[in-house]
Image (cartoon, rainbow, N blue to C red; front, side, top):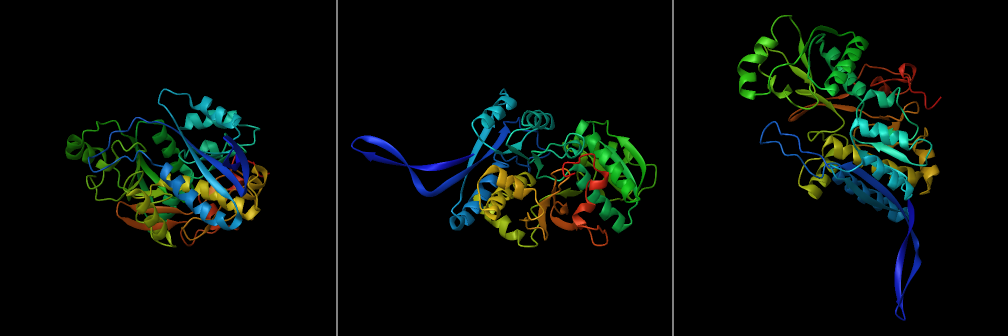
Length: 389
């Protein structure tokens, strides 16, 4: 939504609104629903209540810093739907009010509903939380852009690293949720893509009692077939942390715990990232999360497209953002851009341990005719989404 900033002048007791000079502003919405805080794995973990929002606020400052020279202004409207509220109704109301750039932190089911509701309308939805491959494939939408890596991108990053280390025999442990099963599907695809072998796959059916799990369940669960690495599919963090240092064989743990693949991590400092890390921590008093980074990217993408196109109009921003000329600095060593066939933001994926940056994918040696970043996730020929065709 583009609005003129109004100046209010009191004249003879009347309030008169006039347009300020060079004061056009683009309003960006951040939409989420209040969540029930998940139980932390330990008392050391704190769950930030402002995750995502802080990334948006920092990016708005960045946009307006540039906007002072381009005579463009950006504003943020934060909308939190109550737990008992209806996200679809709130989204439709925002669209009816004229908002055209809506960044969402929602569940996969909610994302499916609102993206269908927005079909054919002049609105961009920026997905900052859902990694489901289906939204980059069979359920892709022309107005749905993905700021977070897909599961395929995450598991391909791991696959490249495992192949580089020659850890080719995988023991896969799959958690009880649908998300865990989806992650396992992506793992199997990556294993086939990079010539890795899943020598054993088991479903985790034990309790989540750390004392019992640590002492008895894990060693017995992980004995048997010889393997090079244990790969965990536990997106909710229910049990994965208990596996490290407790396996029958002394093996590394990777996947959703151990060595993880992520868009952002507190240990990342290369390519000027320390500057972004420090500014965020000064603003919030905490480290920037992957969610914060995804929302920051969304706001910055809008700002970059507005600056480069010289306009705050939706069609011009949309056209430039999805063009070959668009390039966004993301502090990861490469310019980021959107894949024309499925609206996924192509970007390097970090491979990190708790307190160490281990590698950045795509790794050297994995080649592609256009950009090495397209070795991660579904490339154009293998994608069931053909938006750019």
